[in-house]
Figure 1: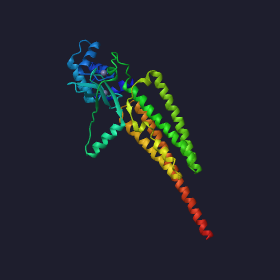
Figure 2: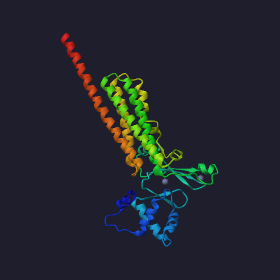
Figure 3: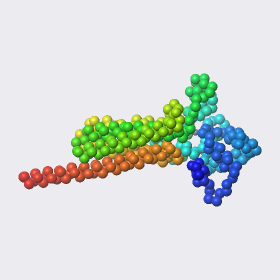
Figure 4: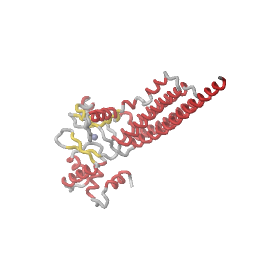
Length: 323
Ligand SMILES: [Zn+2]
Ligand SMILES: [Zn+2]
């Protein structure tokens, strides 16, 4: 059973009957990567089955919306459009008023702001719609044949990898600098070990990126899908700057803990929100790695505090004996 069939199986209510026509409509719909009107779907279906009725297609669409397979979007054209939610995270839209094409993007910074606003107003949000309307690049340049577009799934995987790689790089920088800054031998060893791990993970992620590029040589040329500005700068960047003024080993470990915790939370939170996809897996795997680092640092910090208080006690008791 392929992933798409498995996905549809999960959606079928227990004892729900199969409908040949509906399944055909659903599978055609899932193969589309744009925003279709009901009539666009009727036209597509008639290429498969000339006798299929408009009403059957409409009913199937309605069923897909209720089952969560399709999402209804309103671009202000006086009719709804539909996009599938299979391997397709929620997103915002750019809509061209001249060619009516729409493209998608996602931004953690915008989402964070929307959540902040809703919380400040005591508002329980169920949906946020953001649309940027205007003229697309192709229309502005007078290009008749629009440039190639990639599926959202591919763009999502590409951008998730880019963000994970940027984070890994900034983590590597952080631990390399940390290993030079700390005085305690054991703390230094931990920083070195984490730097090595970051280096290794970075290699794995870069390999994955190369594999993705092999699937589509034009990968680099597609527009950005994920705008995760805060994260793209590397979640460890401020931590690395703070290390410059640190003289206390415990403080250095604490900064590491704060960075790892922030990174773990960020990747977990977004990973969980996404529908099943390569991008989701990248985020969740990365969140797990960050949690392991976090636990390691917390244990080290505790051990350091215990060592320091033990040596303090020893110094005090020696002083007492001398005195
Ligand atoms: Zn356009
Ligand atoms: Zn969309």
